[in-house]
Length: 160
Image (cartoon, rainbow, N blue to C red):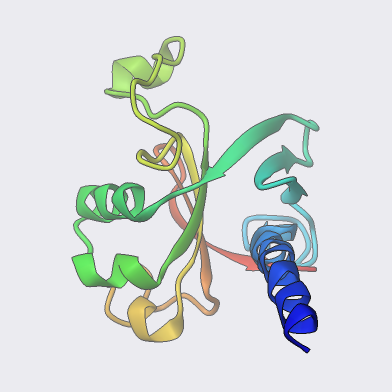
């Protein structure tokens, strides 16, 4: 019996990883498309990482999960209530520009560890209770948003 219990417990991390990948994997759209079900991005789980594929041109970029420090830094930059970042779960990709001039130039290299800093694009899941306390997200119909320095904050929906 003890051996069976140890075997079952050793399988748990694999279950957690599979469920974790499912949090983001899927197709996403938003209201600025021709049809409501048009796929804008596809998020693919690749081991313990993700890949964001923009369907318009097939461009793919590696993405990383924002850790607590990265979410807190992003939330602070946005001026949102700090405690609402703890309930969020976010992916980010690309290099964060230091300024508008950097945004328009070649991307700068980053000295921070993956997960500690938000890049150019951010895709987040924010539960309703936290979303209601963030002015920019309170009116969103769903639990997902996308952010980049050009588009700003956009309500997105997971299609499948």
